[in-house]
Length: 367
Image (cartoon, rainbow, N blue to C red):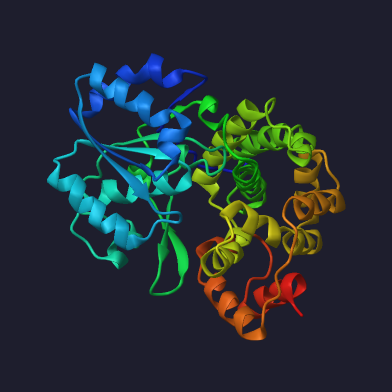
């Protein structure tokens, strides 16, 4: 007998090479004015921005483009761009890029229609509607194209935090692996590790269900098939597979969210500017050691799907992302207190008091 569960995934996903050109007509239903946000380079270098602009012209949709979304976008930037979108009278928002532009697009979609404070943004209860969102990913990492989550940088508390509700899911996602073909080696590896940790953590999450397990087990199997290519730096044959892993893992975390590994990785990204996927990989050894102690059966099931033993997974992560970090006791204390405030910690099934998190940081980065 199965336990009760809920599953909500309202995004219309179009997946495949050249998919934006063939399915762009579906944007017509969203209105006649699009505000497009992308990174300083990713939109143009991938070809996605040019494809999007051509599609909007053919559909006779007026548009305005902002190129310059920050890596790990700040609340402040999103607040300003929300005003820009409102002044343009945007009827929908298009995010093109990796997780940063897609997450920013969700915040902008909220802020274009709601004059609210930072605290109100993260509470997720909005008086007015949220503008429809179109997501066009150019990395195979975050899965943001199919989640409601937007993770932004909060400089006042020196960390990252997420928000989202059913209205911040993208309405449409155009997922084309071709936009990842020319990604450099480091970006390919870091985003692949991000996608992997999403399906791994979603499977571990206490909110996992029969349906998320089905998605994540398949995603883990696919990722396991990419292991050798990632280690060898030979990515040509795995681009499509990694993009599918990312999207499937995103569908998983849309329901389950992430766990303590993400929470502990955020300070490394904020203070050391370590890319998000790499930061998660640095946390992974202590994470799986804790799972082996507190949730051994669930860990074994995830490893079996992945096709790796625990030590093999740790070696894989540390080979791709060597650990060259040493943290002071003061840093450990600050990072542990920050991590403990993240709601994802409670979904892991391991102890997550500040002292528990401190011990994990010491295991990884102690002197």
